[in-house]
Amino acid sequence: MEIANALVFLAAALLMGLAAIGAAVGIGNLGGKFLEGAARQPELVPLLRSQFFIVMGLVDAVPMIGVGLGMYLMFAVA
Amino acid sequence: MTLGKGNLKQGAHSRKTRSRIFKILLIQAVICLIFSAGLILVDLETAYSALLGGAIYLLPTLYFADRALRFSAGQSAKRALAEMYMSQIWKMALMTVGFAAVFITIQPLNPFSLFGTFILMQILNWVAQIGLNTRFLKL
Image (cartoon, rainbow over all chains, first blue to last red; front, side, top):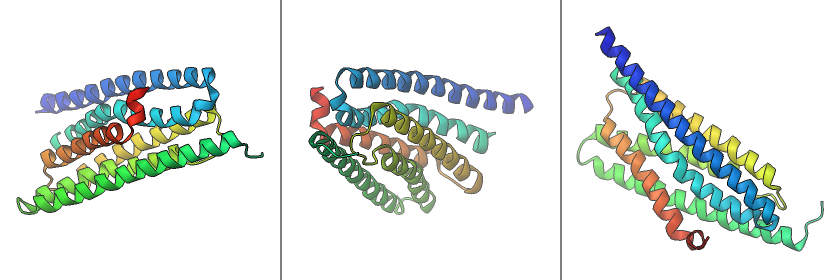
């Protein structure tokens, strides 16, 4: 039983850890490209900001579902 | 700092984006409420789980949109990026706390309904953002 519980926590940790790596890479790339675009054409900052906002929503969706499932495993299943 | 013509134009763009994002969030909230109301016919537990899933998505996103797209004319790229990152961090933290609080305090709960509504809200966000923002597809 203790091993089963430990495996559930391990699964939750993997879910949230891998989700965090994915989100970090995605959002890091996004921020880098935003600065690149803003440096090339500073007058486009407001436009780039709204596109940045939209893509941020796309990038962080799946990691947040992963975090939610991890929380469910830790607090409701284990 | 004086507001030049360019800054006023930038401000108008920010206001337009902000109002569009809030309109999308309002549509999502209405759909979530209708979805939950419909699920009352199935089961009360399923219905409130769906409502909680929607709330866990909508409240942090509302905070994120409000903070990240706050209007300020002539904002620098560095400041915009910092504000966007800070609001994103807070959004993630609020969602994590929301999930933990719901799973700890509310029992019984239907996880399929909760995650189903959460995922539905995410998909609605993608579809609405790309559908309403036609300029996004041209970039």
